[in-house]
Image (cartoon, rainbow, N blue to C red; front, side, top):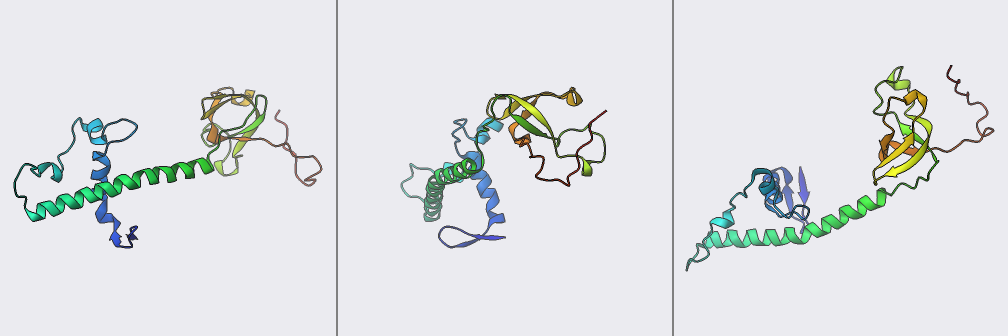
Length: 183
């Protein structure tokens, strides 16, 4: 597989993976303030740049060229990381919004993780409800009022598994069959 970089050069990205992994593991991250190698192993690996003695009067031209290339690559990566972070933030913000549920709203809960429902998975409903929304727990979880059928379930669900319930008008779909009421 090949890709073109920002200057138009074609590269085989598979050959670059070890370099990318090394750069990621030896770069300081903003969340921890440390490198992933230091966090995971307790030490940072020595890089070729670390072996270059700086106090020599003459440095071999190949070593100097390698050092300059490494420094340029690090500077380019340092410029690209904030751009990539901002791009990822914009993409996340565009598709993910805070849930706007209010107390006593009717919601549907996904049955994705419900293992004890009867019948074949193919014909089961993908959402159950409506259930009554009670409160938002943090930014990523909601608490709902569990009906008797799901009394053994925990009442807190991730926001990604909950969606608002909209009541359908009676006359809108006249040929639709009504769900039989449970005995």
